[in-house]
Length: 328
Image (cartoon, rainbow, N blue to C red; front, side):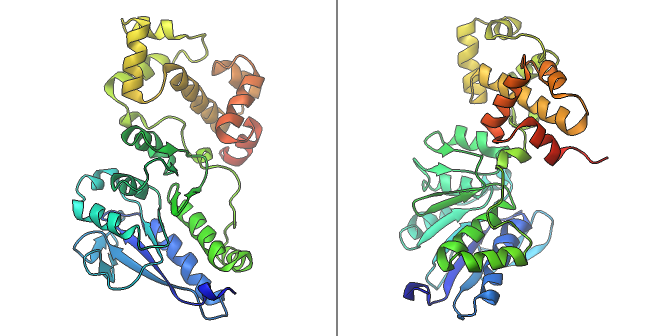
């Protein structure tokens, strides 16, 4: 083992109100399990640190988490800091002190990262400008829209860009923690921990397999909802932007401009993702043939259906059905 690894590495899990327990417990279990299997005696010291002035933080499930420190009283050097996720509404209540703390600490830590919605915290602190990042698939479009200087990619379970690491939704924090462990102490130890926790060392597939291509209906603007409502029963028909603009009593040029501003994507991209989501639902919950699904979703042919699945999910429609179809 290299000399630089022969020391306890202080890992900080930064906790905010309404945090999801697995965002904290998952990485914590990876790092602490590494201590058990690392016979050299060197490993990690994991600290839960509150991003507020209160040491007791209540999780989204109501369970209290007792932090050893807050951002106001940390008195030890930090090797790695990970911001755990929370509800987006909580971010509106965060004080500027947290962002100032992160801006100051970035030059003093070896690496910094996030789990799930924690990417929004790093972005608001200005630490992700120009970076390749990921977050929970459900909130990726919002992250990209709110911070257009980021390069958001929701396919990977985690992304490393220089010293900054971001991971996807919830359990992706464990994928990231295993990767950090492998960086520090090598693949054999990381593999041992993964086996112990019954995890893949490198999980197959992509994050977008687990979610919808489009944001939840409730997250859409009223204008985007109106367009989606008009489209939902017409997906198997040939549709072009002229049809949609006419239904909204708008010119094509004005409609395209307004829709891009409201939704963060072009009408064509929105329609493509809407058809993809319908195809995924039919694959999961029906026994329709691939040919019929392609027809009902407006793809024209099974070749077009396959092409879109590989584009967004890196797997075929048949592979998707095998992985996610209901067993009932």
